[in-house]
Image 1: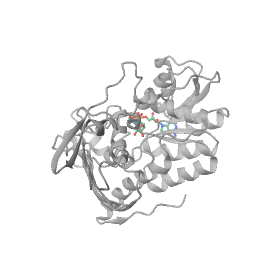
Image 2 (image 1 turned 30 degrees about the horizontal axis):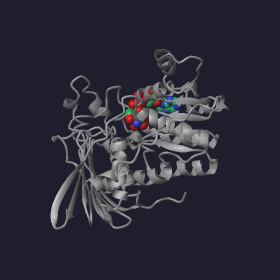
Image 3 (image 1 turned 90 degrees about the horizontal axis):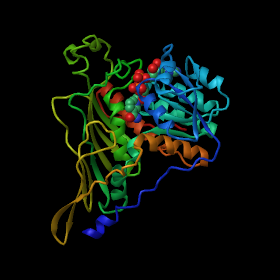
Image 4 (image 1 turned 135 degrees about the vertical axis):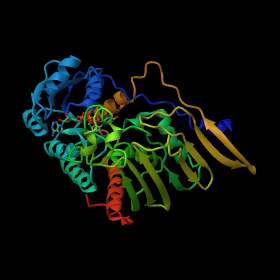
Length: 387
Ligand SMILES: NC(=O)c1ccc[n+]([C@@H]2O[C@H](COP(=O)([O-])OP(=O)(O)OC[C@H]3O[C@@H](n4cnc5c(N)ncnc54)[C@H](O)[C@@H]3O)[C@@H](O)[C@H]2O)c1
């Protein structure tokens, strides 16, 4: 079996590039929790300069930049003012809450600015399609912020499927989810309808979908039967220090769905911010020649603590093999660094988007389909809009 395992141990390609002398000018749009991670990674890149920042809350961008020691930044009260005021931008990191993803991305692209857009892509499929159209018309680069894609262990899943060792994939079960993990450490922007737009299904469901759909080549979703609930989010007892959050909660905290994908693949999906269970189980990929078990992760940060496991029948024997976890190099700067570095490098070299909208449109179509099917209580057909 050693030979089979060796086929999955491809050498890691370091995507860092040496600086060419010209600084890449970046603006930060939305200066909350995740913007901090973007800024700290850009600060590690000698060829990148943070030139501008915007937030709707007065003083928030200024406070963040001062705290992180970023100097010489120009400040703006919102996304559009920043884009209008900075004609020389090479790119923006859009770190707003979900409901502002589409309007900000469209405005940036329409004004000729390359975009790193945080996940989830958008809230609705129509919004995602509108962003794709703006991208196409602009000829600029748009990439979506799924940093688990940068993990070698996550990439191993795709390599295994693409190697053909599983044969024809016909069934995928998503796994993972949180027992208690409605994200409210910095307020209510994830749980209010007017800012978050969608709940667990968009927030961490989008990661789960990216991992699994990415492995099988992002087939088009055809139909969705979806269910969502909000039993925990709407319960004041869930938030001992902030019972008032229950009234604000306007999204889902659990979702399940049965999705038919092009190519005859069934996706059996579930995700949770909160439930009375440790995990709904591992993710499974079943093929005609083998099966793959992907250990449950609870936060979709691109890590799992147990090895992947392959199941095959060889010479009449039912066998299973563990794929050893690839350890991080001690000097590896981490997934967030790689995600932003890949964006900068793709723009500088005229390369492909590391996480292209053409794929994530289908991710968004499933999220949208789950929300719509849950609302009407029956299966819906997915219609992918013309781009
Ligand atoms: N990739 C990851 O690991 C990861 C982790 C956490 C959050 N996220 C994503 O990042 C996004 C932001 O999350 P967060 O936790 O930082 O939220 P947050 O609420 O802490 O910050 C968002 C900020 O955006 C600002 N904003 C909204 N619309 C704006 C506009 N038009 N112009 C300027 N500023 C605007 C808000 O005022 C707020 O300060 C979410 O979509 C979330 O899903 C990604």
